[in-house]
Amino acid sequence: MAKPGMRAHAWVRCVLFLFLLAGIDAAHSQATVFSVDAVKAAFLYRFASYVEWPSEVASRPLIIAVAGAEEVAVQLEALLPRVTVRGSPTEVRRVTRVSELDGAHILYIGSKSLSRTRALRTAALTRPILIVTDDKDGLDAGAVINFFESDRNLRFEISQVAADRARLKIDAALLSVAARVERRPQAPVP
Image (cartoon, rainbow, N blue to C red; front, side, top):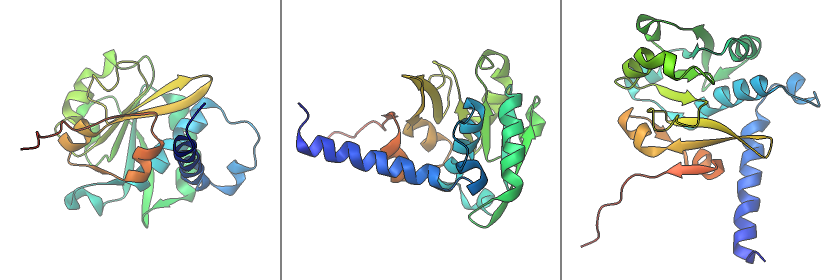
């Protein structure tokens, strides 16, 4: 049997998760069934509200670059024209070349595309870009956030190590609803 404190913590995580998804457009929220691609698109949009980029890129319009996930790009195109993130306009950009990453805040690499996007990932690793993948090896490949399915539910894991490398700050509210968080190494206490 779970301890009362553990149940309360799980309840708080559930409520925070619901708040995370609550910002989705009202027309979409009335639908009873979402495609997995629509849910991923909504997550990508909502992730942006919980990430702080360095000042040199924070003031630009939010660009979500998509590689190897046409249906997610289509869903983002339907969602993004109606919304802003922190007052900035948003747009989606399909990318296949490194030069197309210029100005991108988020790079989403679709499932089964990790091995085909090595050049994009390598270039993104040197920039303040939130790399989001959809592969069992996503975090090992440098992603900050990685999607995975568990019991027919879409979940995500976060690497604070990768976020630090990209000079991104992830809000504690997003960390609290992640299924798993790869934490920074802790310095020994003297």
